[in-house]
Image (cartoon, helix red, strand yellow):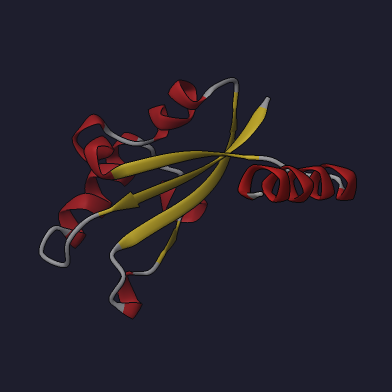
Length: 93
């Protein structure tokens, strides 16, 4: 299983409608998502475990998917980070 960040956005005008759509489609969404709406950022975030990104997006109703981003999350070791850094130095010459 992999971990995915789900980020779904809506406008201020769509706020109540979008939240109702999500909770109707996925009742646990009320407690699994964190929302920025009260701060003026009409976006919700959740981290889920799924077999692949297509399984992760199933949490979001189809009508909200065009404004949804799914990002696979990974941890890196210090050695991997250093290798990335060294690769950037070589690539940027």
